[in-house]
Length: 273
Length: 271
Image 1 (tube, rainbow over the protein chains, first blue to last red):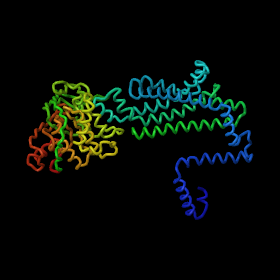
Image 2 (spheres, each protein chain N blue to C red):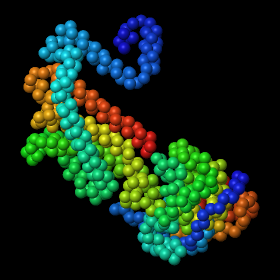
Image 3 (cartoon, chains in turn brown, green):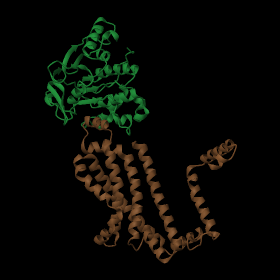
Image 4 (cartoon, helix red, strand yellow):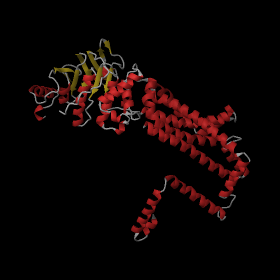
């Protein structure tokens, strides 16, 4: 931008820039989205290969890649990924289901709202990591404590979006359905749930992001397997190549699961909104 | 008046029109600060199959009266009696069409109409009824469209068809054509008369439009306040026996129109 302002005759420059933007926009958007990662990769390669950044601070892309291949060949990578994926999916499924149930209760029933809102709000105010020592004390270091932490993480986004959305379903639609004899579960199934489907999906996407976040928190603090464990293990052994590999893997898996959910979301919105 | 649509040649499932009695119906709304009596004592007998237009100034309780019949609301005292049994809770014998179409946006036109089907009807009979209603309301070509893909007039026809799918003994219309443009409104009025021929039902229709009431109704009720009485009551009960289609230029029509406008507090010389 500053070049445009300082150079005389900026008009032609501006049209050139406009032309470049228009050409870029003609590319498919997934390709445009890959531009920045590719740029980062190139920058990374250049700075590490030239020795601008020492390799003990940042290894080259190739050595991170070969660290991955090495781990995979030794058969260690797949179990780490598998156990993490299992924890995330299990915690996400249970947490969002609970969030849906309690969100529906609080969103639909004024009694449930009065009884539960304060308590759930207070629980939500507890910083997530504060649960860890208690969960470890109660459930030991096993799977239960980790999945429970992820359940806590996935619960609140779904609970909040669903309870709020249900309270704002068009009153006129509800009254129209009531005038045709719909009430209780039939009303919920016919009007209220379909009306909040788009909100449910935005809650689910937030919950999924939270699930990955809480997974790493759980695994960092006490695990013998999983991507979070790989992070601490690599840190302790000074394996910065594996550390960066794990971060990249977390980014990739987080993005893939979110993309899957967003496809489902688009379909659901086309169907229900 | 627009040209009258040809009555449908298809056989239509018959419903039975039911008589409605308002027995000293009153309705009071209480807030923490004040109590407001909307309806005083409304006493009214509507024989089965009659088309009754209910006129009245804004806020005089016309909609409250309809809601009391449907069971969506309940009177503070008195009762609405349909065919001998009092309304208590949402009544299956009534169907409501609102001023707004109130269609479910995620359902097609056909599926929206199906919402009105009585739970007791068989699947096959329900399907046939919906097809008949689609033809009657000239929506067959739009049956698989979503509400956002159709015009306001079409949406209001869907709302009407949904109400008829219930095969109601009493059809309640709360300004169903109020939000439509003038031309569409005239077409909808013709449609309503066609429907009344095919589906014998008692019709209670709230409207703001004196001409509409005079065109469609067998009887016009004007709700309003009288001195010394809390809440609105029936201040005029006008029987219309002229055959349809009605001549808007006939002396009777014009006289009745003037009288009704005066009752509603409008100077008829300007309109």
